Image (cartoon, rainbow, N blue to C red; front, top):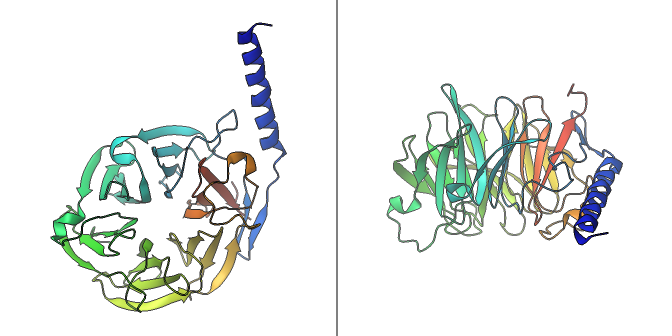
Length: 333
């Protein structure tokens, strides 16, 4: 057998082996009550069983058609609801988007992202990739030497909130055209300070809505905070969460990934009503290779998002790029 023929044979065997492993994986049920889910083995993998993402340290959102946008180190990868790659925005302004949010404005959907390595915020057309806005924390005039934004969200009037969670822990606020308006917050462990304001979203469970912020490294335990749209402290929502990394709200529920390897779901009274994800001691671990992934075991939950049916997508902070689909029990998928 020639070397070329041998190589082809080995590739074929490897492809069948990976596919067989994917087929053997069984769904894992997790959660409780109305927030009970089952994993979808192999969702988002290429036909050969490999990850389409590469290293992940970002977020996930769904558009109005339930297409799934995942930010990875290399850029943004878009999947169909069935898990097939349908589009990619790679390189340039799309790399290392630590957090992403999606918003419909008129007839168009836009993605907002916080570029922690680039030190800026971005807004681009979700379907064409056209960049329409960049946000620069230096516009505030503050003398900070470094900016590393980790989270972004948008208020009903279009104001944009950009959290500098890996540097100053200041949250910068811009109008819908990207003009700097004001800022709030500072680094520390006091009641109204942030020790890594890592994630945030608009909490639409309240009227008027509030900013819900993940204070990931607050001592002694990670916590969630409410701030008004004007940047005023309201209250500590819940504490003792480990390392909350991000938050998404749908209806009366908020899903909060914890870097230790779980997703905590709060109800409207901010009581924990469900915990998703099993963990065998591999939490808070970026270096779990794909060959060592275990169905239903999360190694570093970093982002999550509900689709229109209430299914949940979870992204792990992971060297090989892991995205998990959780089908909500009782939903016709």
